[in-house]
Image (cartoon, rainbow, N blue to C red; front, top):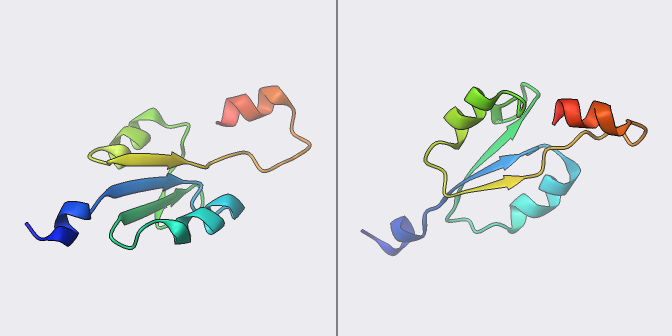
Length: 85
């Protein structure tokens, strides 16, 4: 096994198209295999984080999950945020 293969980590980033992910993902090591998820079709891997079975399928075999998905509606109330995330 080469050094790069040993360093290869599979990392899932939820909310991968969001503002915070846009700042964090570029800082992650180039040797990591990053899978960016999101609820929109333009995400590299579309994922509804309220769907437990879908999350299990996407997270299977991952070394880490960086959970950045959030409701980005500042005027939302607590109950509506909890229902969606």
